[in-house]
Image 1 (cartoon, rainbow, N blue to C red):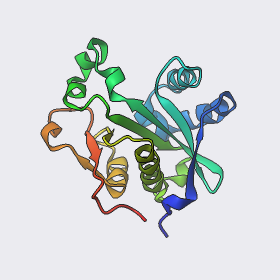
Image 2 (cartoon, rainbow, N blue to C red):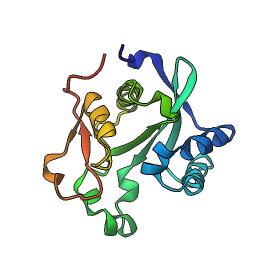
Image 3 (cartoon, rainbow, N blue to C red):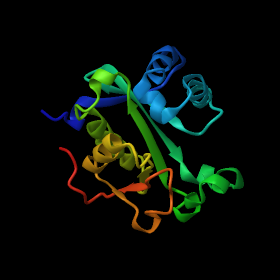
Image 4 (tube, rainbow, N blue to C red):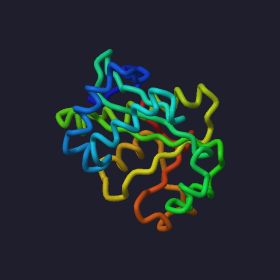
Length: 179
C-alpha cells in the first residue's frame, strides 16, 4: 500500500539529531549519493548553526524519523564559486529552491516513503510561497528519479543532456501526484 503524504511530517534538524543523521549518512545507500559522512554531517551542522542558508529537516512517518530532507536557495548559489562547476544554476530563476532527500535506513527504501515525503514537502514549500522547485538527482540513481517523478517532478527540457552529473527536474504543479 502506498504511503500517503498525509502521514508524513517534518521536524527542523536540531543539534540533538546530529548523531542519528551521522548514523544514516554512514549507511552505504546514503554514502553512495551523499559522499563522506563526516563532511556531510559538518555541512548539516553548519545549517543548524546558521552558517548556511539551507534548511534541514527530519522526515517523520507517523512521528518516527525515517529520513532527511533539505531545501536550498538557487539565488545563494548563483555566484562564481558555484557556477564554475554548475553553469545550469544561471538558467533557473533566482527564487527557485532545490530539494535533496534520502531515506535513513535501507529497510525503508522502495516503500513509497520518499515519494510521499517529497509530495508533502512540496506542499509545505508552496504554502511558504515557493513556486519554482527543483531536485537534481544523479541520473544513475534510478530509484530516486522514479520516486521524484511519482511526486510530480519532470526533467527540465532545455537542460536535459547538458548536465552530465545531475538530472535537473522541476516540480510540475499540474502533474498527477500522489494523494
